Image (cartoon, rainbow, N blue to C red; front, side, top):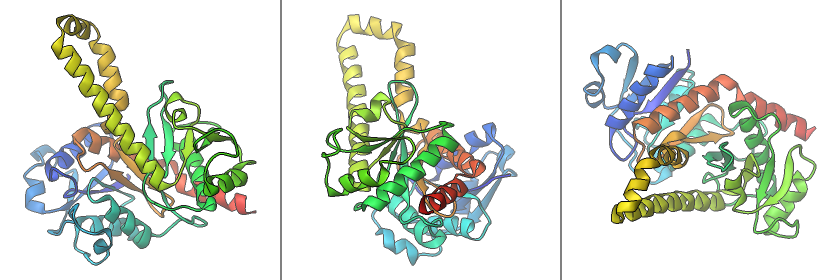
Length: 329
């Protein structure tokens, strides 16, 4: 059975939504849940019927959002350090944390190490598209500066993830730039385009609107650009939701229309709700680490756990190593 170590103290709202999310996941999937954090706080949140299904690893230290990511390396008793070390020591197969993302990525990279041939790990997120299938965007924050060879590897890793986790037979891959022409982009994207030109599924440069129209299964960019795209998308979705609610509230006719459109609004919310995805996998490391949003609710934690289980079950890490090995040859 897959063993998932869950940082119970990470996140903006303490252990309560994390424990609840873990219980929701246990209701749907069989896995071994290991919660790391303050035992008394965690235990009080677990219903008696689930106490024999959840292990607790005691620790008092928590890396807060205000701490530096590098501080995590020194704080061996923190919940995220212990969670990562459980994977390193073979006591767990994957980690889920809604805590300090920088600390999670730093510890995962330095404590677990990179997969064979991987130069830089990347953070993946799944974006909604108008064709109903999610596209993969990477990197969304693990690397602020990237070289052309890093973008090449992001394309390979994103393609493997699409094949194994999303079951896309031949993923289409696009390089995010400020125009479709080969001449567009900065020097890094231009050189990356040349490196990728003969790679299976590569379509060339794509623009920002292609992320959401389903043009490509995998969109490649550096972590600076990817993180700006992600945060901007979250902001746009939140603003549109607010405006729709505001306009409906101000108009009796709109209220009537909204009542008739409840199912449509419910489906729309599902598409743009971050909780439906759960978290962002850090791909390219020896193991599985899912980085959740700080404000994750129980549903987000549940889906992050499902992501971790699926990641471990598919064997995507071996696929990446084999694909990069073949590329070097």
